[in-house]
Length: 99
Image (cartoon, rainbow, N blue to C red):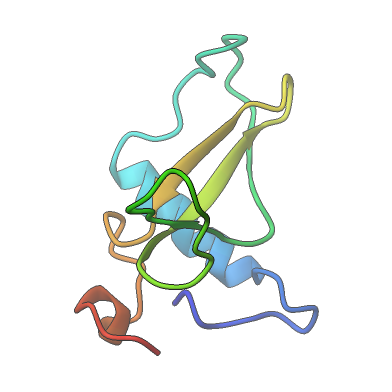
């Protein structure tokens, strides 16, 4: 699921629908913790948060957590949700392999 791309390289409508379904099954979204509204949009792409073993340098490759952002359309607060926990990673990534 995470490796599919729309014609512009961003998420397709089907991907966003799959994400919304997976989040909804888990009771997400709820009210924004910053402003209290419940108006969220799914970001047009993924975040990849690299895990760092050293706070004095930055490694842009390696192990990380692919996430989907939910954005509060009122205040702009961003909530990140791990694709693996949502069951939305391709099988080879979910098993720890590299694509």
